[in-house]
Length: 132
Image 1 (cartoon, rainbow, N blue to C red):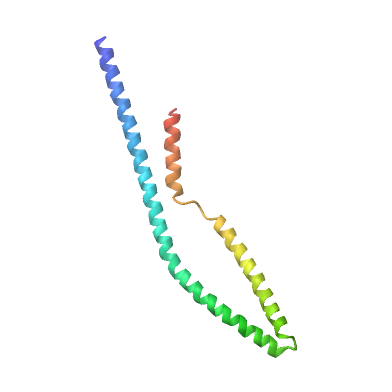
Image 2: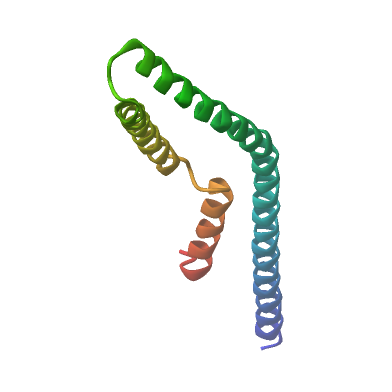
């Protein structure tokens, strides 16, 4: 009887230690996940600032180029000025639509953030709920 109590106490401590270790592991993985997301967001912000600035300057240059194209088209043809504006607008609208569609498709193909950590967390949850 004394041996059973000692064995039961040892088993209880062992199970308690395992549960405590698993809780620590899950906590560490959540902490790692938060850290990875934080780093990825910081890196994305640092990458996007020059992209946004460059896009603004290019937008202004494109605006000026559009006026130039309209007046070149007006000079080179007998079309009225409004028709030249319409042609340049239609061509740019089509190009913008195609570019936007390609960009959206590429965004959909990006992998989710911190994919490896999420998979490890899922595996731990599966192990906790179904240890066999």
